Image (cartoon, rainbow, N blue to C red):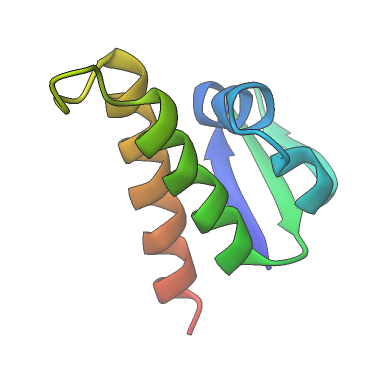
Length: 86
């Protein structure tokens, strides 16, 4: 599946989500602020993002920290594109 992400979300996915790189088959710059990513397994990618939210996106009181907020936005964007493609 091909997803389109702005540069901020693309960087977050590729640099902060452990093992996400292994699911990205190719990347293509669309314009100055967006990339297309070809993903081998979109469901697995969502699981990896979710894992990062659980392990690094929550503080000790289980409240969402700044990284968690960014990861939630990334997760929602991937979910939206996944459902829009069907």
